[in-house]
Image (tube, rainbow, N blue to C red):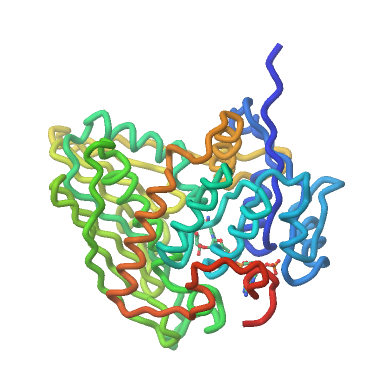
Length: 393
Ligand SMILES: NC(=O)C1=CN([C@@H]2O[C@H](COP(=O)(O)OP(=O)(O)OC[C@H]3O[C@@H](n4cnc5c(N)ncnc54)[C@H](OP(=O)(O)O)[C@@H]3O)[C@@H](O)[C@H]2O)C=CC1
Ligand SMILES: O=C1OC[C@@H](O)[C@H](O)[C@H]1O
């Protein structure tokens, strides 16, 4: 007889778009993605706006009976049934919200971008380690079977030594008059919510650079990159057209990360313009078709392939009962496996790597003179911060 799966009990912090998407993935049957060793239970959700928002969230995601709805983040982190908190607030809030959960003794999966700057990231990691708690940045793309396969292919030498990775994750968000489809208050462009292309979208371009050029470096030869950035800013002061070059001189490798809110990676949204990611080695290339955050196909182009391209599709499985499957469940499965195995961080995205990525983004934003308000950049934890209580700031 098969043994029972290890079941992880989740608390959801915030009720916005991605909280709904992720929670629906948690509620999908793991068997529909051929996972049988771990499972997930949603035990509570909290809204900083009102208990009603949390209740309406549970209706929207078609949660089963018995899931608790809270009107504050403090109640959620103090619920003894919650084992791990999924932090699904804007970037501005990640540091204070994750600290709130860690201080209450909860494990945390925190949405990308991990924090607003590197010192906040270091503080989170120090706190999680001091308290012996699990912590992971929710970069779901890393846990896609496609990403795992591409990393394996690169490591096995199929395309030889990789010298360059070019990755783009850009959206065309502008209306006919050049302003954006969303207001200046929206989290995408509002500096008070750490808005901007780099922290929201560019983090995925950097994910591809890092998971190939940095993650696969042997531990003894780890080399942090030099960062060179160019940034054009929107009227609000947030970055809107951002390019970052990462140089790894010891490994003779270079990465180019592109992101923008003005111009899309592919103008027709169908990859007609080519891949979003190109991984270029001495024996060939791997092309990953966009979007960079949720890719469904890669192609291997061999130098001696005579023009033939190997095309591999990696669809995201759906739970037929719920007619749902978005691909965020793989990162949730990673959290469950780590906790089952007593691990406090994921090997696929170690905390040191989340810090290294935040160091790059902080440096790039500094070079582009992008500034955020003190209330969201501080690395001093305050349980009563408006970012934790939902008060205006
Ligand atoms: N992995 C992925 O594919 C995606 C990840 N993300 C990431 O998820 C996070 C949230 O994004 P998304 O869900 O799109 O954002 P939304 O604006 O849809 O939701 C954010 C939620 O955060 C809470 N919140 C608390 N304080 C504030 C505030 N001052 N302003 C706005 N919201 C606040 C609100 O919930 P409440 O009122 O209930 O407290 C709100 O609903 C970001 O870090 C983003 O980068 C976003 C989209 C996709
Ligand atoms: O993480 C993300 O991926 C998908 C995008 O639509 C979204 O803006 C971003 O936050």
